[in-house]
Image 1 (cartoon, rainbow over the protein chains, first blue to last red):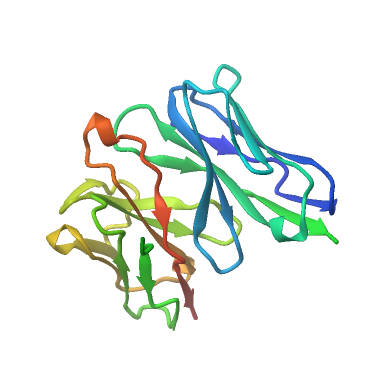
Image 2: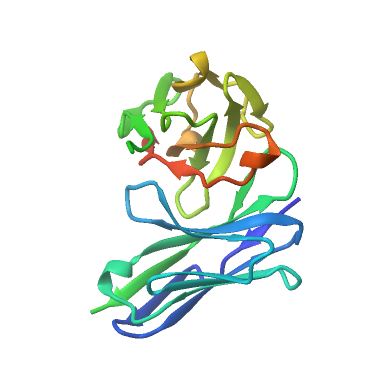
Length: 113
Length: 119
């Protein structure tokens, strides 16, 4: 059974700093891994999706990496802004079966102006 | 492209009452998901439909929860009777995935959810 962990549960950094969010998973037989953003009272917005054959994906100031062998993914945010404050969730998609996403518990990020 | 629509946005009921949530997925998306997200946790899959059929309902508390997807489009999730531990946000998501390998792993698109409070 896949388990996804995100540490820390909360993180506060001053505006302008670069930061890294961590995600680990127990079963390396994944099809892809997604990073989502969740604002208070809102649903999930997909940020980046990394296929199992890829090492990283980039979108603007965001860069996500994937290391299947170690069961880890990171989300790097460059030059953080107050608008980046949100909860960030990672989710692993199994390599077979019913396209089931297993989510981590998220990291609540606060950017201090 | 219109996103996933859910209603209502908020619902407050007393325990043992019943409640229903509605979801309209993105047009053309074959797969629809209902998730339960308890405060401070990640979403947990309750049920997954592909077109009209149920693909996975292994974590749906079937003694009190039910869901249907008529005509392979809209879906409703019902709780009857509600318990205090059902307080959560109920998220609906949809994806292009149709059970074939070609569409496997397509991104899931989420609605804004329904926040349910049980008194």
